[in-house]
Image: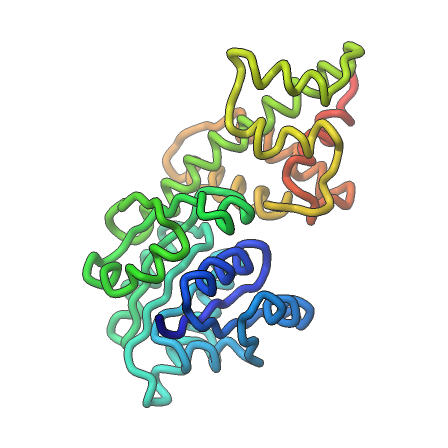
Length: 295
């Protein structure tokens, strides 16, 4: 199938790598964390010492880094993608950005890199890393249609299902709105399970009741058992990642003059998790922040 670069070997980067290898691609991978580079090798990728080496060796590179700053660094920073192109012999490069980013900054970066021989395809993914690994993630794709067509085999391998959103920036806008709804669903489930427990009900047994009720939502299947059993330390999606996304949501809302009262409360609950050393736990740990609140 060809060779693809993956920059970022965390939960999502690993899931993406598994999808690509399963589709027959050779994967060159980089992460600044040596342990993650070693781990990505165990799933079949070839780890490299720098992002620049990966980018130089691959026409299409998938970015699964933490935030907008890291996306900018990988593409336009010293030793990044634009430097690799400028050194010659590499040709044009496509960067598929799966990170949830500041929409305006990513759109500006996408315009800035075109004269330098690069194209950005925005592709934040709706779904946990486990859902992505299983082929159940949904891609929110934005960017130039011709570039997306060139990268279609890679996009299809990672996410068989996708929506096209138009210009770069709209993918992150849609992802932030989706994650707002999803996060508040998690919060509602967490509060319901905590409440049931305080009333003397077994949360594991009550979860089955909730699943069979009018309150059912998919989040019960994805996060319910983790909350009911208080098992958070093998994350599918982390507290600090959710907090990053909710901070972006609140920034975007302020820019439009919109108040998001429930999102603000949810962000404070995530901050409570971080303050209690739970930043790298699964974001189902929102239940712990709720349980700590006493009247």
